[in-house]
Image 1 (spheres, rainbow, N blue to C red):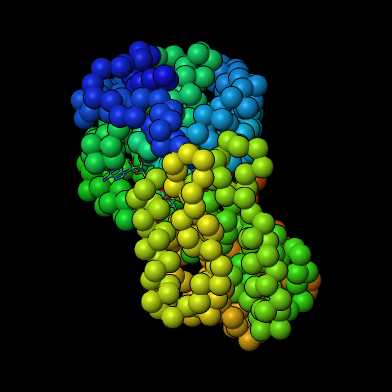
Image 2: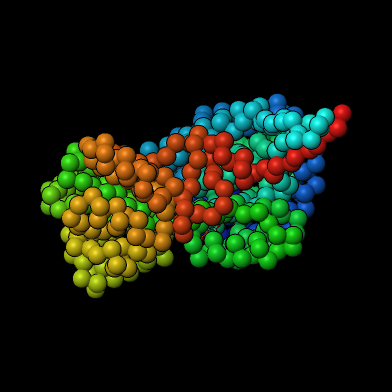
Length: 480
Ligand code: NAD
């Protein structure tokens, strides 16, 4: 049995209450046992990170590079084993789990390089004889609060830049999936991080998370999760003395537009991948398929056929396309929205029923609604499951207006062979990430990630843009 313990000031701590980490593909399978961190442990972790900050923020770029690169090498070397752990605890398929671990390894390699590339600017002053230097400095202790749906990639894309730019860290993963973050922290610890630089406190948001939000020694919070929690995070960061810098990555209701001139095969693959892979549990998932009238019926028929061929089964079983829903409460939410969709008058064209497999798990046949109006709740609220809504529109103009008619703005896509419509959509889509003829859920790791409107707040994550959040700018004037 794996024991997921807390790392505080360089020591693994196993004391306190524990909770089982249950495999959603087989609820009889206990992946491991996780500690339930306390307020006192969160406070100790913050104190350790504060004490470690002066030395770490002044460490050489080479020292930071060496540790991050070593961690990257180990993550990549162990991607199959760690991918299995991830798939067992979260329920995404084994190829998806291994892919996510590989992504975490690549992120650490990228930010290892960034340690060596930190640059400033030197300008002449508008006043005679004065030099101006603009440099970036670390913030201090940063608190990282992560969701359950990317148990290693999201912690990686927060921890790697935080450390690369010289901050010290307290990370609190979602208590549903503590194993992958624990494995990542273990690798970084053994790669040679000085004690206190990276601390792991597994536990409840209302307990451990709340301490991070309130504590005066935490300079900044990077949060990914739901809108409801994000709003609490923002309010707490503003109320704290001193106020904290914060960034929020939250929900989505992402549109994929399919125009009459689209390549049908491409459109169906983009829709199936974006809406249903990873069990639809991606903030970038396409949950609104906005389809023009001329292709609508052919698209629905071909997508339904594709869905019929998708194998929903144990996440680690060979040939599984879609794993289980993460837990009972998310499954209840998915079923609730399927019932809301029917009550609202949408037609359940395919799926939506519970499935029995060899072991007891949270298996749901992906669901497709047609006849959906963009005003219905299933078109407006984030479901976070394998449930997609087809909205029929008459032309491109209505498609664009419908795509933008949402409180969210994370990712968005269009399938078309027209350069004119593709260009117009890229320009006018109110989303942080726009894809043309591609699944809208997949992104690269060396470019900015994030959204607008109700999906995100603050600086972008990933790529070189991560420096915007994890550093503060200093302007120094010198009269030589
Ligand atoms: P959640 O908001 O329930 O929890 C996220 C994290 O916040 C967890 O670690 C949780 O323990 C913690 N938390 C909860 N209450 C807290 C509190 N009062 N104070 C401090 N911390 C608290 O979200 P979830 O269910 O884990 O994840 C699903 C959500 O995440 C979806 O809405 C999804 O769209 C979103 N998400 C967004 C992105 C993105 O980049 N935009 C990526 C992945 C997931």
